[in-house]
Length: 462
Image 1: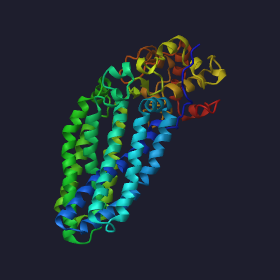
Image 2: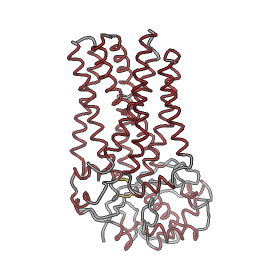
Image 3: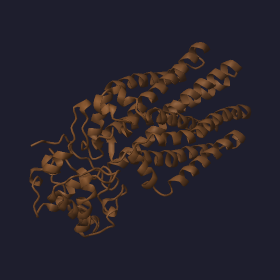
Image 4: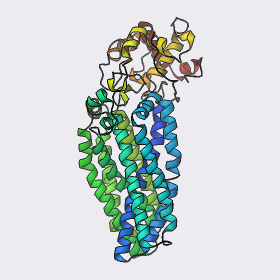
């Protein structure tokens, strides 16, 4: 009998593995995107400093660079490996699929990242110590290396949304996967956001400039850069939406929170007001206000956007062939990959999963609740909290808190079995498995105590 190539399931109570990845990724994205935007800000400011004979601009670059070493290259260096760890344990087959297709792209990106890290240290600590022409070349090298890391990573991230057509499935070619329908729209939109992030974070350093005339000129320069990025974000967002797969457009139209449009408009308006204020009254900008605006960008700009982007990929985690619950959903002849749905339909999930305890391979009245919990952890916990009070789309709430297993079973027999819902995976469980999962979900609606009473029998699934 065929065995699914599955890994142990990692589940974080109440918040789910998805939120762990989301929180880590949001912090990392603000740090990394600010760094890339700041790299071009440095290059433009230093060019301006030499052309116009304004050496005091170099002092701002140095101070912002030192701030960046902490803000981006400590936060980024900690959260970067954090993303690798959390995604590897939460979505091992997704990461495996990406590595098998893009290993040399990632290796190339790491070369540019090393250049970027060396470049920012060299830029900061040699400013004013080497001749202007050499230092300007170093600054532009830092900017270009930073941009290259963006270009290479976005090719992978956009593939995670979808390859954009059937060609990659047939060829398995890295270029067919990399140059997908979504790549340039996402790349452009992120580049615009980087300008905004560099301006807002840079305003923290502007607040510390003592000379009023210098402070005004720098503030207006970075406000202009941020304003250009903010204006560009609007048409680029609509371009991005047009490159999304059909399931993502359905989620965008029907499944995101009702307040999403108002939230986006509010974020844009607040950011625009801040940048206008920065340009108009730079001497009235206290440091705490600039820091609060950076926190606002993180909490209300990036976090909702990252949550929405993760939601738009559902039910997939990579390439529209690996479900969020790690099941391979379609054949990929170009990679020698076969769909696992037929095998699940024939034999069930528990029998094929290599890390399910032996005493749960066959469901009995005695182990039905435990078997249901294990099925929920494997098949559902990537997108749902299993607890009634969980924060990540709690599973019991999706069934209205019903304690009647028959109500849950009706859904498991229909849309979930067939995959009729565009944003949910097809999970063709066996008759007994559907019964056990329905029993567990109905039981979990009775309160947290029920879940705590169901203890795992194996360390593989927690």
